[in-house]
Each structure stands twice: as structure tokens, then as C-alpha cells.
Length: 192
Image (cartoon, rainbow, N blue to C red):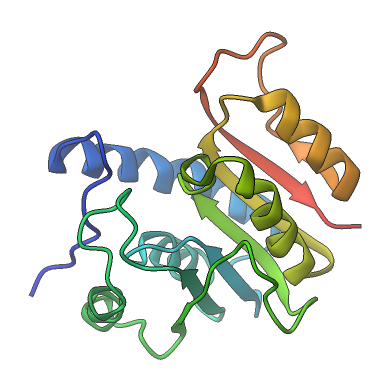
């Protein structure tokens, strides 16, 4: 059996694979600059889809416990099912360390202050203004001093930065002085 992380909307299978390869390299570098690879972390993958970022986190942190949260089945990822996400983790041999939770991130996630690290890639731009509630949910789920590493398209980066500054320290990723609309960037936040 082969792992199937699906296809991003507005892209081909090949483009989706290329995007994932680039994201894996960028995220791995950022994650391993925050924690050592032997850290025993609790990690939240916010908007996990079919588990690609769960896989990246598991590779970076072999002793971590990872929870992937998603509503599953959103149009932004074709065939995004919980069944396929679990199959992927089984094929990759990490199903013992990765669990999934079907949950809407615009609603509170309990227990709060549970995770050391939250990650997300190409999720929040899909949920419009509700993304601010979802950002809040993710930040609330972190322990004090925990990190949120978010890779996304930020068409209204000024709004995001204002929100983030009110809730966390921005460690890196604010980008250019005049950011282009829809620019992909990775932002690292640290919860106070």
C-alpha cells in the first residue's frame, strides 16, 4: 500500500507532492531549531487533513505524541477522510504515536494548555474570518512557552500580525516589509 496525502485544491498531484516536499524541508528546519529531536513532546497538528504534518512532526521528534485535528472532508483537500488519515499512519508505522480527533477548530479544544507544540500548514486561509477563532483555539491549547508554527497564505498579513501580537510573541516569519498578497510564509509564535 502507498501513502495518500491527497491533492490540494487548485493543484495537481505532482504540484501537491512538490508543495509537500518544500513544506517538509522548511518545517523540519524550523521545528528542530525549537526543540531537540529527542524531546518528548505533545504536538497538535491543527487542520491535519490526511496526516502529512503529523508525519513530518513524527520524523522530527520520534518520541512525540501527536494529535491531528480536522473536520475531515473539507473541499480544500480531496478525499480528506479520517479513515484515510489512519491508514496513512499505519502504512508509515507511526499509528501508535498519532491519533486523530474530528473537531472544528473554531470551537474550544479541551484540555487547554495541553500541547508543547502546534503545527499547521495551508489550513487557515481556507476558513475566512473564522480563522481568528481557530488561531485562538490553537494558542489556548498550548502550554505556556509552547510554540505554534504556522505555514500558510496570508492575504491579510497585517490583520494576522496584529492578532498574533495580542496573543503571543512572534519569534520569526513576519517576512518582507511590504509583503505580497497571498505570499506563503511560515510564522513561529511563542505563547507567553
